[in-house]
Length: 93
Image (cartoon, rainbow, N blue to C red; front, side, top):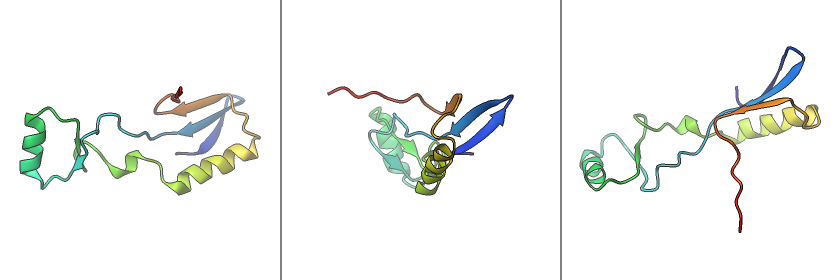
C-alpha cells in the first residue's frame, strides 16, 4: 500500500514500497527476444527480462507518489517509522 500511513499501537507507520533495479545497466529485454537474451547472458550483461525477472509495477507511479505526499502532509510529515524497499541514497558531489 504505497504512500499509506498506518496507526499501530499508537505509532504512525508510513509505507512506501518499490525501487529501481540496480542491476539493469544493459537494459530490460522482452521474453520473445531469445537470441538477444542468449547473447546478453553469454557476455555477462546486467539485464532483466520483462514479466519474468522484472515487472513494471516495481516502480511507483505518479499517483502513488502524490498519495504519499498528501498523506504525509496530513500528519505534518511526522511519522514514527518508514517501511520501504530500500534506504535512501545520499549522493555526494
